[in-house]
Length: 270
Image: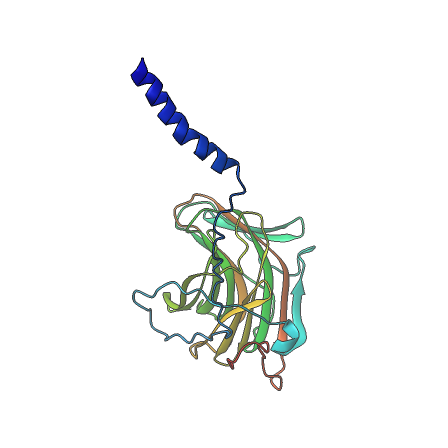
């Protein structure tokens, strides 16, 4: 009994100071806040016209670039899809296109399928091309986006989004896909189904600038395709159904006497 009394006394000796200390005005050390290092320059990426090997994913630094600073000229074609203005709408076993509820809809109904539609807009070499697009039914790996300088043999450039929010730029020449900007993750893309993202391409000669939701994300040079039309596409990978809708199509001329300008925080020239 004496042994148990001594043990209890020792235990109280430990607990009481701990209890008093816990009731005191204890302050934990303040955590050190780490501020991310944000580059002040908006980089311009110039890629070779060959397929890059083991190219790491690039996180471009966006620069807010109002359309006025890009030298936007006279409007050449515009569509809000409230009515059919000469679109070549069609259905095939693979997929189809339609205009419904003020949007242009493209869909494929099998895996590893590609479907596109050419716009009624006139061919143009230098332009500003903008559209709002939304994935309606989409899974990882599926892809959709814009086609420009689309030629008679389907050679064209392609600015794409994937359902998981990656972007890339391709040139399709003689049915071969040449990667100009590899799959890239950028915070400018709003992820998720039934969410609108605005994509735009500014083209002048061999110079191309790409914008997502009114922010410029990267630019390239490529001299292969000089002129052509415009289109939209959807592409499935493993999924059996991929559907995308488009709205607010806008194509305009650009003013060649107006030099595209980045904001004053950047020391990068286009």
